[in-house]
Length: 291
Ligand code: NAD
Image (cartoon, rainbow, N blue to C red; front, side):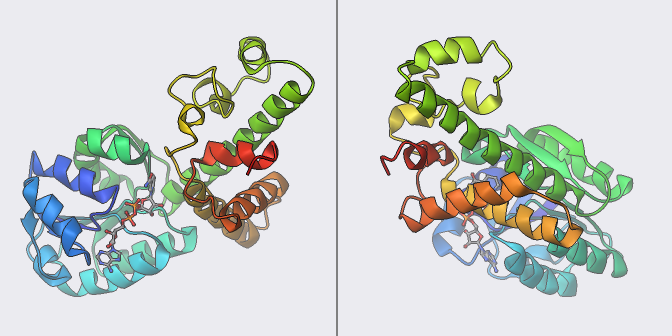
């Protein structure tokens, strides 16, 4: 199978290389360095979008945001062969995902949105989780390729529903991370050490993933970024991007998301303080006053 892969950054670079172990992958990116790395790891270089997609059986994109996805697919639609399967793995606003998939459908292409979780490590190791939106047929066509790049592949429903699952999950993650920081900070101020509070709360009703797998207080979870000065991991700036997408979607859907809005405000403060590059659990430093 010939696959065009567009967007070879932190995530796409590793994903393209995993696909190249099983298929012929043509790699395109605006960054020559990104293309060179992919070529070193077994992909073929494409000089343009047209060269990448002409004659390809499938197209995978991993781009920064909705504007990039809309622009790249305008070009893709003009040059792809009929019957080409299109998979956008970028995290973008729900409207962009639905608009672009709508245009693909009008032109007779099968396309899904398939945003991921699992970070750069998951992209490199081929253990990502994919949340997909689109028709059952398009999803079935994409699944074998997604299974090369990931471990869990979910069909979340119609076009855009992959993005919906992604932003709702990450909004919840941002909220329980901040709540966990507040609890550990208060416990500390009241004289209860982090390990003792962890031992109790992780087996009581306050238990949550941010606590047990990614504890924002240094100590209890050895692999957590809090034990290496909050180096990411998953950067606070990326969490802020996802919270902004959730806010935008909530506004369109007229859904009340008061805690999501509060989480966005706190991550925006973190970024304004110049710390958007810290792991998102570094919001602990904002809460405990050490930022
Ligand atoms: P990145 O900035 O490292 O990579 C994006 C790549 O797209 C860059 O190499 C850039 O040159 C390329 N690009 C931009 N416009 C282009 C165009 N018009 N044509 C061709 N290439 C173009 O970003 P990333 O960290 O790889 O993230 C990609 C997407 O994955 C984002 O939507 C992000 O939200 C999502 N995501 C990232 C992570 C993570 O941990 N990094 C985790 C989950 C999801």
